[in-house]
Structure formats: structure tokens, C-alpha cells
Image 1 (tube, one colour):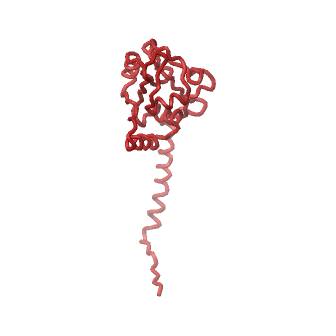
Image 2 (tube, rainbow, N blue to C red; image 1 turned 90 degrees about the vertical axis):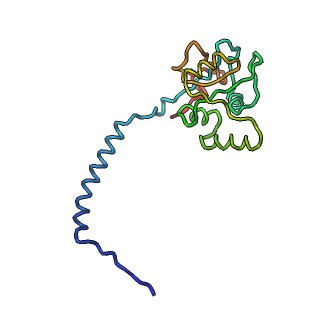
Image 3 (cartoon, rainbow, N blue to C red; image 1 turned 180 degrees about the horizontal axis):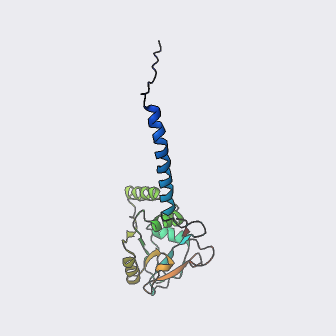
Length: 181
């Protein structure tokens, strides 16, 4: 046997509905205005390039994207001076780290985390060192032989030098270490 019940509405239901609609409209207008005023991320056509950096004294002038990936996967590679390349990363989930991981590593933040957990379980090497600040990153790259990192071209200083990736510098068309935020 099927028992049916009907929903009874209070006598004031229509009145509440009538009053709520204008409030919802105002809330929607306020939300739209706030979204219009919010800072916007860089849009297509304004891709962000990341300069791969080394010490000015390094003889490394070019690296392939494949070798850059291998370095940031903690594989043993050396520079022309015989120094082991030591990858230095931005903190996880920062905009440039996510962009770098997507372009160079081919992974989103979740997959990167899974990659390093799997590597640890299998007894492999650990992830690159994370450097919390831009100033520290530049100082470490300048002073530590074999250190390699990445920053935006506008953040370059005389402490570090950008190298070519697949034969191109960040300002060149077709530079491969470029992402859309």
C-alpha cells in the first residue's frame, strides 16, 4: 500500500517567497560587483615565463626540457663543470610551482605529491629542496655549485643568470617553460 502525504505550506509561504526574491537579486548583484572588482589572473596572451637560473659562474648555458624534468625528479645529472645539478623548488601549491610542475613535470599538484610518495615507498631519491623565499633562492643558486632553479624573468638579478631551455631564452617565441595561470 502506498501512503501519500502532501506538503502543507504555511499561510505566509507566498509572502516569504515574494520578499526573498528581491533579496536574492540584490545578493546576486553584489556578488557580481565583487567579482568584477576582484584581481584577475593573467589571461591568455599573457602567459607567464619562468627563467631557469644558475650561478653566473656556471658554464651551463642550455638544458633540454627532458633533462630539466630529470633534474627536478632528482635524477643525477651534472653540469659542464662536473657539478651535480641540484634542483631548488618553490613551495608546493604556489602559482609558479604549480605552473612549473604542469609544464616541466607534466603533473598537477596532486600527481606530484603521489609521484614523491611512490618514489619514497620504492626507496628512490627524495624531492628537490624547497626554498621559501625568492631572495634565498637567488642566494643559494649563486653560491651553491650546480644549483638550478626557476624564477620569473622580472625577478632576475646579478646574483643569477638565466639559461636557455631547448635553445631558447624566456623572451624568445616558443620558449617552453611558460604557463597560463
